[in-house]
Structure formats: structure tokens, C-alpha cells
Length: 315
Image (cartoon, rainbow, N blue to C red):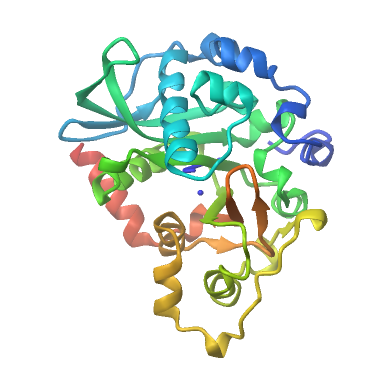
């Protein structure tokens, strides 16, 4: 929620989904540019590195160069395509990187292990975790949020024109680092980013493994009955992609069983106080069923905010 916050001029034209996904979104750089060097990112990325948190050899901070973004893309490819069930297009298969045009306009949050070296990246420290962050002001100037390709978020944003939104996406962690320490570092980084940019609401698509909603009836129904967003924060899956989440009655659901069936990332969002949108979307390219996560920052539970602040000071 990958992990991956100004009132707009002509906002809702910008937030209509573009046919065919990111490659067709107006205002973004071309896919060729994205693969060949991330010029748009590189042009604005040269800034002093700032640590957002550190535990031992692990550091969380924003990517500073296009080379670091490429390391994050290689990690995403490894997790999504080599370990997971995503199907790469020819460009991704050739580059061995998960790339789309949004990469050039997003900030990329990285967890870096300074004790491990990436032999494929000139022996730089290894990127072991990443989240992609897209602020509303940048989304408005470059064609809209990625999430708009699956969920009708225009009405949600219209109801809160005084708030700033951040999209979280493309979250992943290298297998040996999938532990509490790494995940907490990512969230420390997000918390610092949200505070720095005065973000009010975080949104994004969270994925359940598999594309058969019948097999996912328990977690989908649990999210519908227990975490469905109130009207003020609700957005619905696009009509052509809408998958019903209410597949089991509330009385038949064992919440403990349902929680065990949810991915750790989704459970993490729920612990923070996130809401889930109306309807799911099947993403055949990634082999997942996606739900919309909406997390108003003002509603994040105070104990987590205090924990993030203490951890940042300690780091």
C-alpha cells in the first residue's frame, strides 16, 4: 500500500484511467526512455542523500540516482516475475527489470544493506526492499495515479480537495529480509516522507495472490465485512473490472482464519487503520487480485505514530 501522498486544474480529466495502462498515460515519458536511462528521474534526482532510518547495516532512504532506481527495478523483477506469478512483457524480460513509465516521476524508497554488495550494479550496497511513492502534485502534472487504472478514485479525491494524496505501490522485499526489521524500516521511511511533504491520505492497490475470486472468498469477504471504507473514503473498482468481494456472509467468517489468509502487507495496512475500497480487480499480468487501500494519515493509530517517531530519533 507497494509497497506504493493542490487542488487540481481539470483534476478529474487527469484521473481518468488511460486505456491499456501506464504506457498510454499522457504526460509520462516513453517506455523506451524508462528502460534506457530514466532521464526524467535523473534530471531531478541529484540531491544529498538523507538517511530516514537505520538499524545495523540496514538503511532506509530515497533513491538518489537512476542507477539506484534500476537496482530497485531489478529487485521488483526478481520478486514479482521470478519468484511470483507475474508474466513479463518482452521489454521487461530482456532488461530483467520491472519497469514502467511511472518510475521516472515517482520517488523510490529503498532499504539498503551496506554489508551486502550487488555484483550486478558495480558492487554497490544491495537494495533489499523498496516502495514506489507518487505524490498528487506530480500525478496531476503527468497523467494521474496508477491506481486509476483499476479503481474510480476521482470521486474520492473530489470529496477531499483540501487534502493531499500519496500513492504507494510496487512494494517488495528480498526473501532473506522479509522480517519485522525490514518492514518497519520501510514504514519509518514512509512516515518521514509523509511528514516532510505534509501528506494527508495514502492510497494504493494491495494484492492477494491468485486470480480466482472463488478461492479468495474468505479474505475478500472478510475485508468487505470488517474493513470496508465508510462512504466518505470509499472508491469503487472500475465497472469493467469490478469483482464482487461480498462472497460469504459475515456470520460464516472466522476472523482468525481470514487474517491468516491475508498477505502480511494487507494485515499491516489494517493494523494502521486502513480502509478497503468497494470491489476487487483481477490483474492477470501479475497473477493477483487487487483491493484498494485508503489510509487517512489522521486516522493512523497513535501508538504506531509514536513508534515511528521513537525509531527515527533512535536511528
